[in-house]
Image (cartoon, rainbow, N blue to C red; front, side, top):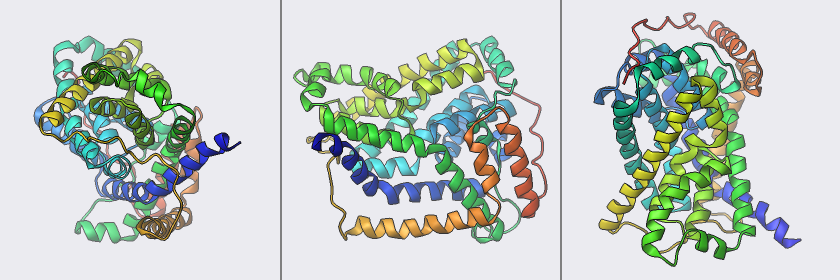
Length: 410
């Protein structure tokens, strides 16, 4: 039965290798979200100008790395007045240009892949803005807005609707270390984990199964490794398709990307595969519910096209600069836990996570956590829990209404 046991062993060893990086990334994300109000974000994203898209990219990088939560948050921004292009830009940045993704890519695959992700992300955003400007019609955006306004509820929508940021006088550090700031950081940290842990677990288990049970010869044949030129063309085309049918998203797709890289997929194919967390089958269904069938199809088509083109661009650029790794030795191996730097980092960050968990549960976070479970009344319950949180911790009541001026056409 060794063949059956080897898959969870690989998954467990990879979890141990990346645990501290996950905690660090989600902590940094929670800190940023705790000191910036969402209304400030939406006021900056009202059109598809370079300035608005740059702001959307920056806000996305500082926000959630959960694909499902970012999709729901993008819909919330769209409803509040952000342009559809800016909302989709935010969505791309919040899942593909975040700290934890870069750290885990470096740990498992090498710094070249981290650099490729942060080079390819802006390329994809620029390409998407161009395609939206040329092909997206006002009528389609208006229809999508009407569908979005119907209020399709879900656990991720409730998560995205809650604004637990702390604003007011004082420096960044003073607001962060205040009682309100620590409470907000702990709540956002836990809610982010509640939204994404299934994706991470699924990604690690799928990775373990593929690494243990699929012969390397299959991947080498599938990715055309005997034909270098065709492999470079084929990789970005098929990478997103593998992601779509694997159901793995967010940070959870990095371990699977490591398996594919070792199996022979091209460098650009890895980049396209990682970008494709926003068009996996469950998220395509969410697009259909949020924006209607036509807009869902438009988003799927344009996202796929930009992922492929960004993969080609990164492959060409990194090949010319000599930055494509010459060896396929991503960390998808069984490892033994020993007293090295990874163990010490994991212990330190597990202590930090424990402190945030204690703060979360001792400041009334459990009702909000229960809203993540799904159900038709999630959004209403999320708002109720959010209002109770503000009342308990001295916030000034509900956030002001968003401006009525909505510039949706790109």
